[in-house]
Image (cartoon, rainbow, N blue to C red; front, side, top):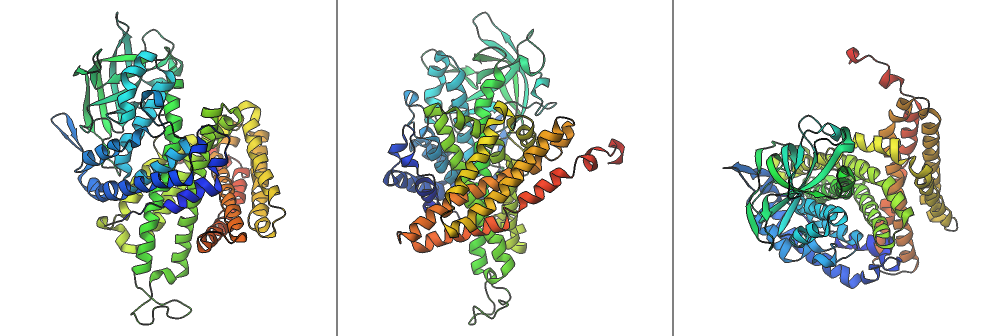
Length: 592
């Protein structure tokens, strides 16, 4: 059975030595002292390892069932979720006025990593609720906030996001779900939504659905979409629950992975709904939830890679097969452990370097979000908007690749369900698809984010990389290890931007055929940048002879591995972009 151990030292290293959270001039960050964060992380790690992880494999095997119109979740899920709520974990970074603790987003993400790594499916129930509360808090009326947020913040009620319909996925302007206004100001919502994660269950008293729908007579297409709160049970004026609303589960999706999460077809039949914000502003409100979800999805990508890596390491240390080519390293045994073999070590180092870089990338994005939300920093918001599709797309692409490499290390056992590696691969695969498929993330990056605000965030990103590289000039080791490779990759980034600007204005396909390459080019730079920050932090500790020298030396080794073996891929992605769109766009449809 697979195991999970919370990587507390690695997370603390990123928070305190790489991102230096207590030194950030952001309200609330001064509270993130190492003693406090370590204590909270330790408790969350215990819950993740002792309550979430043990039911991950069984939850995958049991899955969810639809019985007499009600969803039955796997054994132990309800109890583990209740334990989460009793500990106050759903409220960690929620607003204090509704019962939250208002801790910074970057720290809340570090806590979420533990639960998402231990049990992806179970973590989704609370994760989607978190995004729903953010959307309601940002856009709903005070009356709706007072009605729904306190129990959503506490976890007593959960929330969902209802966008997709059977005939329209990304193109939401084609949706048919309608909402007709009533005399009392409420709406009657009718239609059907598919792929609704956590769409129904009995773990909580109520489920608050956020539903995109069109008001009859409003503009066609995406401009006529509005957002509505449609609760599973209506809420009385005194806060008690009333009658069941007209929303039902049509079926459960049969999926490749995340079997423990109830992915539902939901049918609305004149269900009572309440407008969130203004009419026809539904996408603006929903994007509050979706942008947060995209950061969370990026995190899920490296979380599954992380737990898969942990189990691959243990297997590689225990599995005896063959001898080291340089001579037996286990002479008393019949064979050496497979971790002695160079190709196994290559795969493990690829995984280790990716996970550590992706974690730092994700938490760095959390800091940028905090800068905007707590300081109103428009530059931080612009940079975060640019990086969000990179985080979501690159980290989930590479998270899937990393998990399959972990599976590869187990050989045939990796293909056998009870070893658990298959589940990690199947579970992480959805992260490349939901919250906007990764191809859409790449189109968004190149088609919209790159030129946003006159290209200011894209230029600021390049300047940030250059300034960091320049800061390492006086350190010969870090200059060679980090700065020079980063400057070479930055040149690839600048040439890629120039190619898009030069040819994209004449032929959109010239820009978009290489959009995924551009996303990956930026992804490698982002991971190398934050790993470069890690190298600087570790180097300073080693120079001062402080702390665990072996720990810091391992950090330097990991950085060296990623920058020397993965960062050079920026040149490959640039060349593929520069090859032009002809091989992609010139064949006729019939030739495929």
